Image (cartoon, rainbow, N blue to C red; front, side):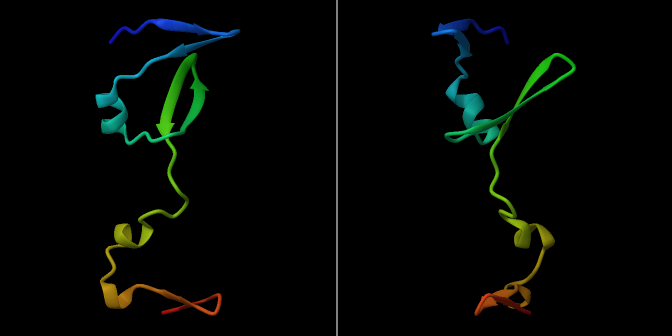
Length: 72
């Protein structure tokens, strides 16, 4: 897909279609990096978000926080 670059002050911006933002999980921020002369945008993820579900734990196996300590 070819998109136009838009001048914003001394910088240049791009507009991303809403469908792409939704499909990729972007919200109000993005992580940006440059690799091999390519700009890569990634959605910002909260640290450890969804890690319990990814481990496949059942509800009774999930750790609980009590008094600043994890209880298993």
